[in-house]
Image (cartoon, rainbow, N blue to C red; front, top):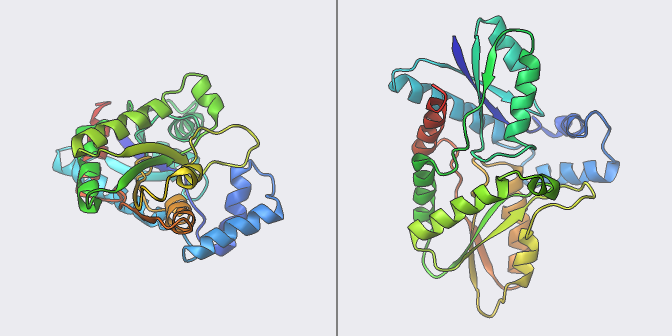
Amino acid sequence: MKGVLLTAYGSPSGPDDVERYYTRILGGRKPPSPLLEELMGRYAAIGGVSPLEEITMRQAAGLKRALEARGNATEVRVGMKYSPPFIEDAVASMISDGFSRILVLPLTPFNSSVSADSYLKIARKAASGAGAAVEMPSPWHLNSNFVRCWEEILEESLTGGEKVIFTAHSIPGKYIEAGEPYREQIAELADCLAGRMGIADSELAFQSAGRTGEGWIGPPLEERLAAIDAGETKNILIAPIGFVSEHLEVLYDVDIEAVRIASGRGISLRRTALPNDREAFISALADACALRD
């Protein structure tokens, strides 16, 4: 049997789970108190819990329906890197249930060692020795349905005359230096959308860099906002094309922190919606599954 494992980063289930979550991210090391308190404060600012898990479950249910509508009654399960249900547990369960072929489908269309590739690595390690084939689709950032999804979102958000900043999660620069195509793929999608939507004033920035003491790719969103000439640009629309679900890095880093920086300079900043479980996005996920059929 073939099954699809929809994978994502994960998020804490609530305030009491933040320390456990952060400790897992740090590989078992307890987080320093100041950083833990800061992260807990961020979650408190967005209401105490991220909607990521709920949205991911909706995406999984939508994908199962879409595959069934295409005549492919494939089982769809969910695995998270840093919160239950964990990827390794989901793989073990699928193998126990008789799945001999597992398609790891990351909830990101871009290649990166810190997201998609790491999910595949965890899944393959969990399946090692069990005889199950574990695969991942090719990058699908320019999939027609994924592009259409973002066109719909932009159409709903553009009012005319605003500056559009496309954003994605920053990653350590060492991965780009090693030849990973992540930044190139993000730029390809941004250029594609700007051209198709006729956006005259746009740029690409990266957000939510980690605090690891190493260089992360930029330019950082906060630095770009601080450098914009407030006398010439009064309205900014953030399009977080590197993300597919509402979660902390958007609800806090954009909706709170980026808005604070912009408003302090007399600039109005809005952001678009995210794909979540939109029909066009679910179709893109179903298309990605077909890449390995």
